[in-house]
Length: 338
Ligand code: ATP
Ligand code: MG
Image (cartoon, rainbow, N blue to C red; front, side, top):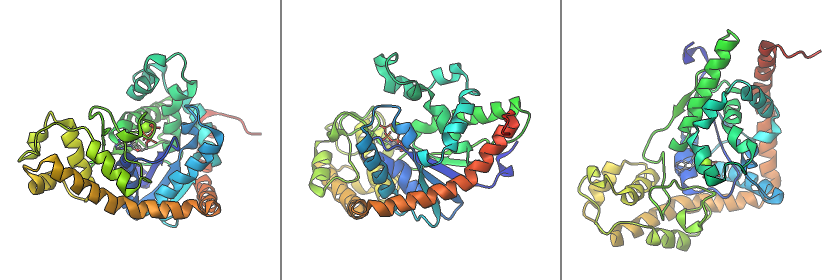
């Protein structure tokens, strides 16, 4: 089966597992907003994924609204896209179960993110953390999504989604689920931790100094970039000169992504510049781009009822697509509804 048999549709999600960070904005939200109007777009706050690690109940509700506010403040238009939180559409959990019965344990054992997140503690983490990629496959395939914009770290899970779709189609002898394409492009597919250029920036990372939060004030952004780890060399004359310099590469990538340009163009402008010149320029750019979004997020968070209304409306529209696909899946599997 080719993907062209399916109407192009985008699905992606973000976990309310903490405050949004710059990598979520550049690697996900900004790109999601850019895809609006190109195809049908469905964006989710994946709260069922967040609880794979402990979340304080009161904070989870607030973090769910904050991720929704981040999407809206960054330009997501709820009349152009469907915006909702996952737990309001129960079909996600239901299809997730079916995919737990399609995915193989051997496939799950290859997921590098589980290994990273579980670390030495693999016996003590939740079963949900281990199984979450099959729920993610359900999130995507419940909408017959053909394209999933994600950061580099999620590519393996989209590949697993393709394997699940292919196995389901093969086992039940039906070309029912599309073979979804991961969409990772641009300079910001993997924004790194500001204190360790070998680790990805994450909401749930230990230290606040390793990430820029979307709600950070101007002084905090300036301080975090000033203290960001670098090597002592100035910026090179060409991008090739960034090879083997992960922290320098990361700061150039962040600048390029914030400014809608390429690392080549950034190097052309700052070739030979020291950190004393580049870091304040980067901080000014980040403040100019992020503070209007932070202000709008704060305004939206002052009116939680309005966010809840947007999510309720999005959930109803999501159910209209998802429920018939779930019912058809039940028919294919042979689950009796009398
Ligand atoms: P957590 O630490 O709880 O896993 P996270 O910051 O990794 O949080 P997710 O909700 O897991 O955020 O991911 C949401 C989206 O943001 C995904 O598409 C993911 O690929 C993207 N993303 C997350 N971190 C980065 C990053 N550092 N660079 C680029 N994209 C990122
Ligand atoms: Mg993550």
